[in-house]
Length: 282
Image (cartoon, rainbow, N blue to C red; front, side):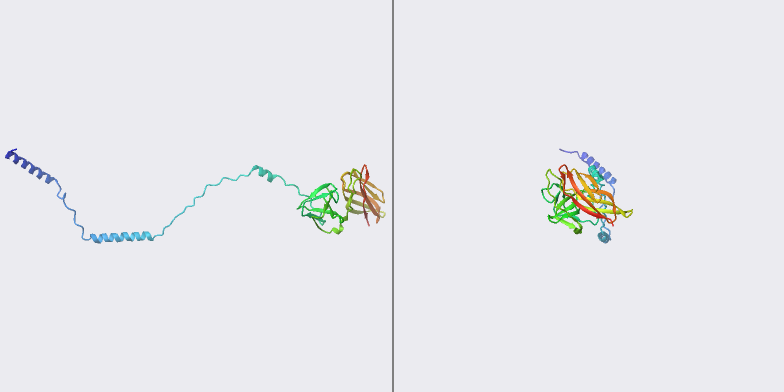
């Protein structure tokens, strides 16, 4: 296509005018390169690096402190007690068996042992002395190796304990030697055995004394209806109910006069053999 020279001249002028105006509007430093680095830049960078290195060394030299805070655990619930245990703790303890008399002969066993109305299995069991218990000894039967003991239940009754498993403490020489009883069927009661006695003497004037007496015995039978107690020389008679084991009475006699006491068990078939003791006031 053929252009008009005049048109070309007009276009050229227009472009030149636009370029001139655009250049006038752009800041002089728009295309300026960045300023050259300062002459001291290497030294400044080196100093900053050394400063950073010193700061790092200082931080690393500081001790590391770890703080542990003790946080208490939550409180445990208050302990409670079973009401049943409270009831047991509040209930009174069972009463212990009566202690033997101070200074008395005592016995214990190494094996639980039956205590009978006499020295063999023909006699009725009335008690059992167990390991750990102690009983007072009030009589002995050397021939059959039995001890007559006071049953430790506070009743005052006695029974015959086999000596095989027994350990006796105290002076046994002063114990009464008990006569071996004879087993009974439906006949007379077995003989009681006097185990101990005591006497107190009071001046009654005119050379007389009041004898205040206590006599204890072993009940060896289970079919008596009473016990008869006879004394001499006053020929007194006392009666005690079945299962009794002691009698108390007072009699007046001349000083120095011997008082004889006889104890027998009795039922409808008659009286048993006697157990006898003699006492005297000076």
